[in-house]
Length: 190
Length: 177
Image (cartoon, rainbow over all chains, first blue to last red; front, side, top):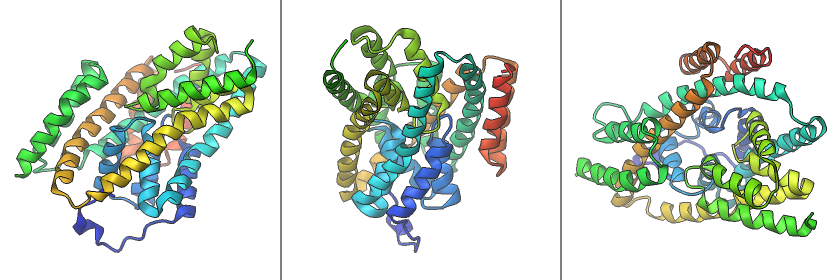
């Protein structure tokens, strides 16, 4: 739904509901430590259903809507490829296995009470997950930091500093940065 | 002890509301979830909530899974499903219709300008969450090393990331992280 028209005229074939379901199942089964890197890997790098730019545009749109970002992404991507059925396929693929696994884990937790081993494993997984999201961030940022990107790199750095370094409240940063960034984009494209 | 149906409708209502408030993702409403589950409704103890958060993160999938666990804890399998659907349904519907509308303006110049404005903000937010996750995870030199190694391997090579997760899990289990 988001590409520049000239790009869209390419002959890239869009996946049907079944392919979407399979793709998102693979993402959600492997999606340790957050699904964003895994979904990008599947959609952009492996199956090439979207370009890096298209992925960023859809994901940005999703971040401004309420709800889990990746779930929103699944809805928009699925609908873009094959309508309501595609959206449903993507959501079922993304949620089905994790819900099943987490209920199983929850039941085990009920049997064993608190499990210190879970916390230890989690400390390790969290470190790997952080590394994975850093690598994904670098790839996601590439199109934005390209030559002649205009004000975009500065906006990205400012938002990163405000939310990541200064820890300002997300909502305020969005309220301030969104109109500013759109105005800058308009000025740059004039 | 509340009746099961009461518990279910409480869960449905609460998570359906949170669903539409979760701008910035599910993690943005975890504090509010904690307030409701622990302090107001008494669904879980503080410790149970923390444990559920940990289990939800250990499992693969999007990070809304804590909602499923809370639902399961309160009302079993039905609770798990009701909580998940309540947390995901409203925002999914909203997104679906918002995307249809957005799509109608595909060719509009203003839409491309808005989009060009949103993308760098989104990239900044992703980078910020990466930093926060790395900081939270970096409790030891081994943990930092795992983070750096995973980042480098996933960026520069085509080695499957699951190998790094397996290694990290073993290191964690052995209490080295």
